[in-house]
Image (tube, rainbow, N blue to C red; front, side, top):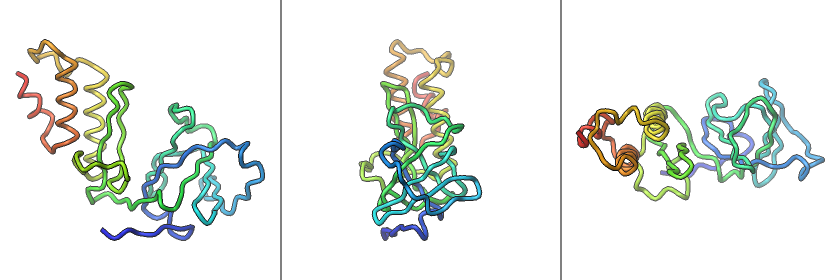
Length: 183
């Protein structure tokens, strides 16, 4: 795959990116170069872009995530500032298998990443956006409840939970088929 270069002219067209939250006090005199119809502000630098917005996640045809300094869930009712380098933007569309699912078993958090992310080790299964969202819903159900296991005959539920999730994120085997191996 050819690496696409992003800049102020094309970063907003079908991209995935993780912005890092920035404290407004560290950039007190920032000059916002552009304001979108939805009220987001943008400041462009040679290395990247600052964005101030009260909506993160899905933005038009893009998927832009804000990584909070405090590692807290982003509340889309307040404006927050994020920064991303131009090299942090990756192509995004609804058809290609561009995404993989990441799970933090300790915090019981599940999210998705882009295959061009340097952290991608090649072991996770790549899916398109809708299939990735479906797997995320399934993983959350397995992480957050025990109802999915009521007909399983297992002595170590946590071990089974981890095995099922690992199979879900590293293969294309459907959840019902995975669960059948534990009956």
